[in-house]
Length: 129
Image (tube, rainbow, N blue to C red; front, side, top):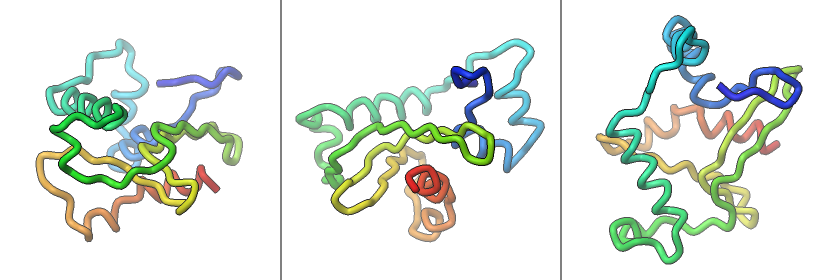
């Protein structure tokens, strides 16, 4: 959990999403009596992919994906919305196209329907506005 310099909690996407799905699980994860290590092999792999996507030139094992190149990477936005601090970290943002791209590293490929139903980019869009 991250705190703003004024001492208030900063809500970020993962906290929001977990709270939305299962409040008890979110409380245990984000407000534990004793923090636990929540890393796993898939999270470590996702971090490795994210780091590789920031390298220039891209390493061969990710360059073959031919992902669009946006001019801003890992852009963090923290805004006060209705008295609550909200944070989002955009994986990539195009200032020319005004588009957000969020890289997903998953066991199963996302379908267009799943991507359209996922509200993370909507969450980020509110912060960008």
